[in-house]
Length: 208
Image 1 (cartoon, helix red, strand yellow):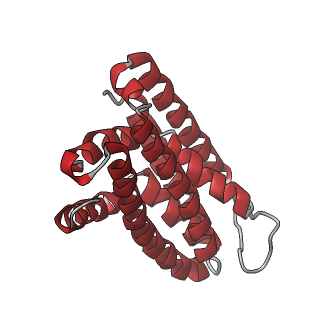
Image 2: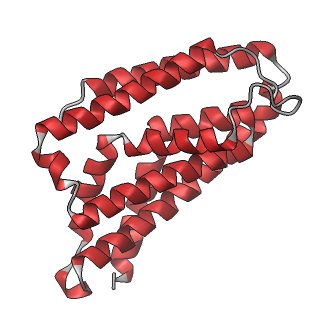
C-alpha cells in the first residue's frame, strides 16, 4: 500500500504533468470548443482509456520494449505522427459547423472517443513518462511492485481526469460563442490544424 506522502507527492506531480501543454490538452480543448462540453468529456474518456493502456503496459513490463528497442519506438512514434497528420488534415478541410443547430457535420461521440484514445495510445512519450516516473515511487516495503504501479497509474488517471475535465468545461463555455461566429470557427479549425501539424512533426523527429 502506498504511503500518504507518496500518494500526495505523485498526485501533485501528475497534476503538473497533466497541465503541461501537449497533444492531450490540445485535442480536448479543440473538440470541446467546437462541439461542446460533452464532446470534450468523451474525448477525455478516450484519453483515459489510452492512459490505462500505458499503465498496464508498464505494470506488465511491455513498455521496456519501447525503451530498449529503437525499431519499436520508431514504429510507434511514426504511427502517432501519422494520426496527428490525419487530424491536421481534417481540421484544415473542416468548414463551418453549428453544434447546437445541426448534427450533419458532427463526427459522433464514438469518433471523438476514438480520437482521444488513438491520440494518447500512439504517443510514446506518455509510455516513457510512465516507465521513467512511476517506478521511482515504488517502494519494496509497500507491497508488490505491480500493484503499486497500478495504484500510481490510478492516481495519474485521476489527475488527468480532473485537468482534462476542467479544460472540457472551459471549451464547452467557448462553444456557444464559436457556434455563433463563422469566422471564429474557421480560425479555430485552422489553428487546430497548425497545432496538430506541429505536434506531428515534433513527434516524428523525436528521439528516445
